[in-house]
Length: 594
Image (cartoon, rainbow, N blue to C red; front, side, top):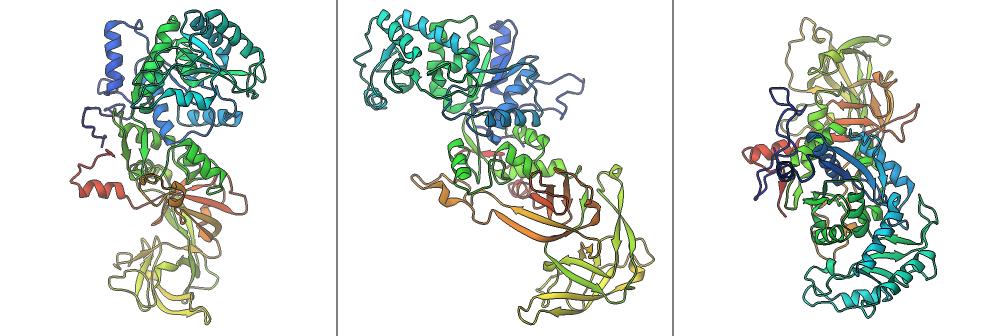
């Protein structure tokens, strides 16, 4: 089920068993173009046999499923090659950063199953060293202080078809640049009045090489360094040097940084640190029915279209965790989509397939009536309660069984009864028989309607006592089987049915269109009167279950209280991915080229 890419034969992160070992018990290596590069470096001994990667998030938002792919690749490549992976926060823009994001990122990485040991670093750890490297570039005649405004710098930069033109300050003497840069640091100049720029080539076909800004003046309190600095390095300057300082060998990043690689290499070559890291780009994850831009996700949150970064509709790792996704399912998803060189879009149905595959043998199967209507068994004794045995999961006999109370008054799904049934309707209707799961065969003899609304309020049935599961007539066949709960024993619950955040597979497909207009107005349905079997009384937040006939659900980790349980639907039982693969003769790709 690995992604098919036209110019590669990658089989994802690994093509062996789940424990990453082959039949000889040896740890396998992944087969992808990044591993090929690492193998070449091993052969030529570029880094003395070392592999050292890093996951370098900017602490300006919550991580999403696309970052999960990067986490799996960076930590995975280090693990499979006997190397190390750092967690480094590229915290060079304090105007957008917050310790809240730092904490959430660490929680997400740990939850996914990865550990950076004692290798937690920050670009701000290196601010003094980065400053001294900038001094070195100035002394080499490779950087200068520029007085142009941000707007003027853009004007001088040129376009994709026209070269830029030199700043009038480009040829300042080295001593003047050193003096001005030191005075920038000491706070003599107002914000935005001066910048430090690299002196490269204003006619370069790569706009990133047209004397990019290395430092800007910004009086913003930093979450770690406070007000010690009023100049901050740009990401494109700090990032390669932070890699070098940490001894990173392979700087693995997403494809949008490919055009920045010449600048990455220029900075490394001219500063000439002890280690020269190698930047390698892979295709970022694009997922149908959502957006992956931090800026756009922040807008969805800040304008109140969802209930925070951990809203279960969000593609954030915290949102997926709250919805009920497991770290194993997300790692499996990242493994299946593989490591590609070309951008592609992955069907969200594959992500849903992965959580189904993970939970189908793990989750206890229980009965929950989401939209209840009362069912009364007229010939069942008024004061009788019997306890029927039911297994939790036929695929996991070690989960054992539980006792289900059965009584005269039950709840069934409102949709499981039709006054006038359509053709081939195998559920309950007047005069028809169905089996109650793990219980008896019943027959509908009457029903009661609300006179004003016409809504069914009660269904009356009789039961055949000989048809009890395991009883003398338990083998009598009927076509329909319904789930149910005992009215006197049911646990009250709120159930939240989540759909896709966006209606369109590609919310950004129309140029100039506002992606907000494509939000799915029906992405959340709250059912506040659901009835659950009584074996939930001691369940804990985050526990996952299969609600028979409904899907997989998770006890909400944020809103569940002792008096009312809140369940989030993780995913329905309908496996669109498996059907799509079957319909394509088993050849459907995990991703599609745009």
